[in-house]
Amino acid sequence: MTLKQSVHLVGSVPLNTAADVFRTSTRILGKRLKRVPDGETGERKNWIGWQLPKIAACAGLQLYDQPDKGYGRTELVRISPGCQDSVQIRDLGYFDAAMTSYAVFAQAKAEGSINSACRFQICLPTPLAPIQLYVQKADQVVLEPVYEAALLTELAGIITEIPAEELAIQWDTAVEFGVLEGVFPSYLDNPFEDIIARLIRLGEYVPEGAELGYHLCYGDSGHKHFSEPDDMSKLVAVANRLTSDLSRNINWLHMPVPRERHDAAYYRPLKDLRLAADTEIYLGLIHTTDGASGAARRIDVAQEFLTEFGIATECGLGRRDPESIPDLLALHAQVADSQD
Image 1 (cartoon, helix red, strand yellow):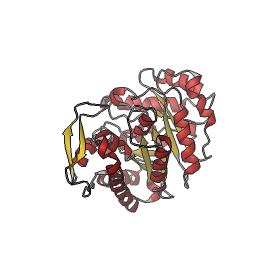
Image 2 (cartoon, rainbow, N blue to C red):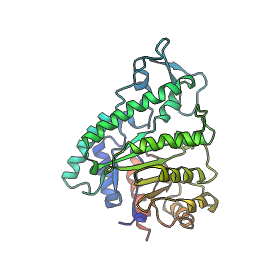
Image 3 (spheres, rainbow, N blue to C red):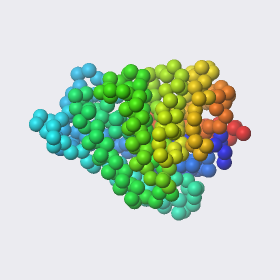
Image 4 (cartoon, one colour):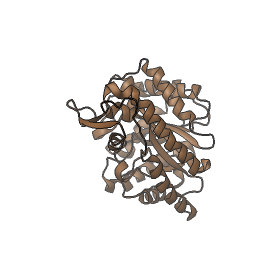
């Protein structure tokens, strides 16, 4: 299976259970999938929305109504009075979810319904995401390292329990592009360099033997971006710096392609990509609104600047109608199979 015929599932798939996700995705996509997520089902279906109550329930924190509601937010977390030095964040739920789903994955693989070479994909948010979206601005600089430590503790448990050769870790990198585009106010002094440093730190935590990927994203709340990118230049700049600065390899990168972008100007920065030879790139150019013909049109333009890439949607599928998922996965297969 060539990269051109490969499919990447970004993360969320709105079916009832992980077993449903594994069964449906592997039945339709088969060997086109090099790794498969559990679909982030149940309480996790709305990306990081489930983290708000978990953070708010931690010692030293409290929830309050936000008068000026922003992108995807109705409430914020703040440090309780007098608790500045005693905040504890723990039990985020990612370890427990991974263990539950991996047991299902391992059983399905043993039974032969999942390809023996396919890895278990775990998608994690960068710590900046829940902190930026769910914590009042004055407390973000204090709580980001506390949340990061808690998340990395859960990742350490995952790494201990799941064999590296079975594991693929994806860092969901979305809020960072909102900061870089000036949509989300941030406490970062030097946004680009500070974001790169954070992404490098997270990537270095994934051990050799396990796969590492980054989902670079412009958001999908209400099927809308938080900002419309002029072109792929910021995506390429981040990808190149990650490639040059990480001490380990990046196995894959995913980048979004808005459905209306059939113009060469959007894709032209791809000619400046400087990735390692073994890094796969997936372009999120599958859109249900224009199906296979629209994807083919975007592929034709993208190939003027990048000859080898796999395909995906722009973002996770969690906000879609569950009944539409089999047809959407079949669309992935159709487009992938049309590539030489």
